[in-house]
Length: 194
Image (cartoon, rainbow, N blue to C red; front, side):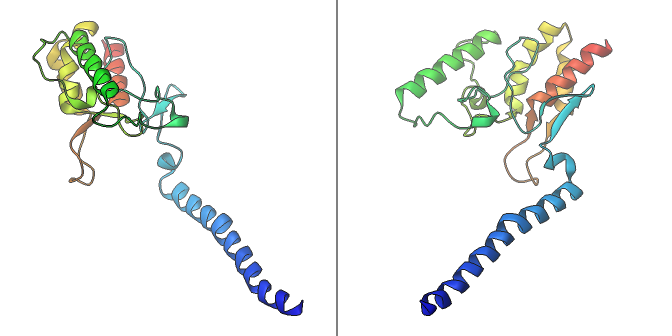
């Protein structure tokens, strides 16, 4: 019996030590560092307007009004508590039908001809279903619709899009993009100032 206790004791002590280290010390240390160095990011990059949280710059939202820019479709209905994709593969007829339906919807909403190409990000959901960004092409395609709905000149809405461009991450990863929530908030701000 003494031999078993002698053999088990170091394993139990290591288990307790690493549980304490990785389960308590490390998370508290990282939380403290992040809260100190970048508190706004640590708290979810929340966007607050007039003292009210209206969203996060990291999570897409559903905008369907013609007076707003529309983001990427979501396979999870923009539910941040359950991100995910449809898991339909590139040969799936269901996926192809859904994309065709979305292409027609984008063309109809934006008064585009049947042969006008539609950027992929406006008709294909991201892997998380919560992507907050669209491409410059996706934003520029929507400018005429948004300008007409808001009663603004297109040049003014285009300028707003250019002012909200985010560069490629670290200058090399991805492409220039536009955060849809930030762009729509800037649009609302422009509307209030008129």
